[in-house]
Amino acid sequence: MGTTQTTQTTRKRILIVEDELLMRDFIDRLLRDAGYSTARVVDGQEALELAELCGPFDLLLTDLVMPRIGGTELARRLRRIEPNLKVVYFTGYPDRLLKDKCGFLENEALVEKSSPPEGLLQAVSLLLSRPRGHSGHRPAARSARGFRHRH
Image (cartoon, rainbow, N blue to C red; front, side, top):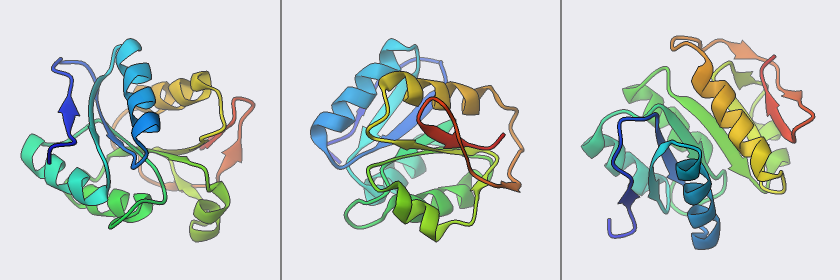
């Protein structure tokens, strides 16, 4: 797993799963600058391996369409280990996700890749500020910041 890089800190731990190098680097830098501890991998398979080695993360930030294991399948598998895992789907294909899901869990958000960086940071912050243990289905809603979340 030579593509994995981790920032060592005791802050909230975010697992970034993105197959595009420039986007992965950008997200990593954005989140570290905001004070989060990050680990980043190329695809869902590497994410599963890293989660097994490093224990649970506070939040999964994942692309939707990736080689080997896509974002929704990855979230489903990681929730077997950590049922209350919070997930941000960061994608250029929001219609594909919305077609596959009737709604989002209370601890999920969708951020379009065309959204400004502030929209991504707001989605991450909102999810991480919620208490653990919320996992009921809620309908997706569009926000003014360019991401969808549970109201």
